[in-house]
Amino acid sequence: MTSHPTPRIKAASSPPTWTAGTPSGFRYLLARAAAYVEEACQRPHDVLAYLDRDRFHIEHLWANHHHRVEEEIPDAVVFRSRRNQLGGLGLLMGRENSSINDLPLHDKAGFRSGPARP
Image 1 (cartoon, helix red, strand yellow):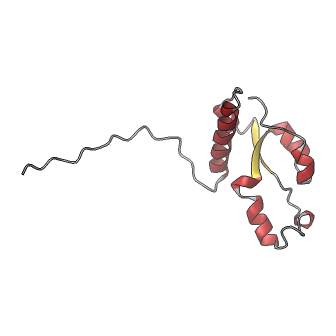
Image 2 (cartoon, helix red, strand yellow):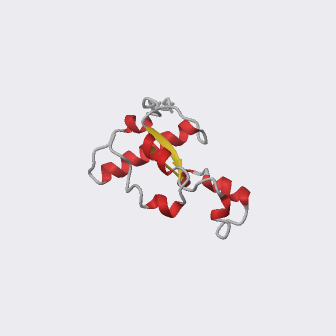
Image 3 (tube, helix red, strand yellow):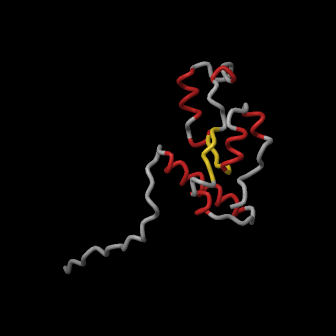
């Protein structure tokens, strides 16, 4: 019986590196998600523009005011944790981010209906 060596699969070139839980990791995931959604909607997108810290900023959907959501999320520690999870973040152009930074979530929802064009 002849033994055959196990074929080795060549790894594809590695994707850009990022560390989960860091601002750059969140930015990468948010940029990829935005590009995916825009491509599915047949809208132009540019992942590299979304990754540009000077043009796009990470925005928390909830402002850092626990008292505003105390009825829904009574525990302040749980609030801080949820506020910083990926589902509580989005990308906005720099000037837009600073102008809505402290608004309540229901006011932010109508401000922007998708990422700005790169």
